Image (cartoon, rainbow, N blue to C red; front, top):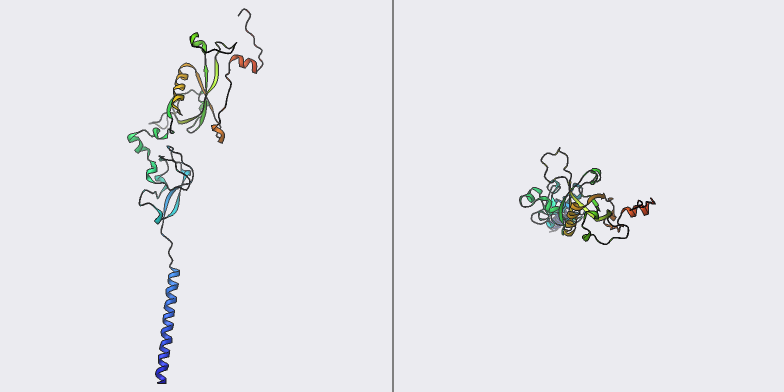
Length: 263
């Protein structure tokens, strides 16, 4: 009995060790094999992307995203499928880019021109011919903001249609700051077959409808030139200016001109 008891005790110890060892291995295995949730690389905005604008390369980046948090479809795994597309809605930094948010220019052209997707809400696109002088010596580029200067000669209008002027300025041409903060949507023609040909001397502005009418009338009745705004945060600042006539120049710059005798 003593020998049998000892054997039973030894067997119990062995079984206990085996059981403990198995439990330890099981715990070690579960700790060592804790898997990271599956992820997927998707295109995400890292800059603000305005509605109806083309997406530039620096505005998007690929980021790792948990698959469990992704929609069933509509994401982009490569940037080439996003860059150069038109944003149909405003896209903000950190926001995942989905198919309904963008459109390919070619797809846009099937139904509407890509230009129509670039026109800011509430405005219209207006083409305007320019010369080297009026166009700031060829410096203007897409995205620039300009002020429009207008010179009118009241001497060309019937007397009955000339508004009352300050004494001494009757009939004199006058120059004034007509429109401010005008966005340039395009320089040259929109559809260019030969990329080597020089840009056509024409600009496309984004204007409020009433301003578009005013610009058309001004182009037909006066002389227009453009002033390029600086690329600063205060580009939306409006300035109040005084109309400039010969009398203004004479007074401000001390020419001391006087009418010829007998006039």
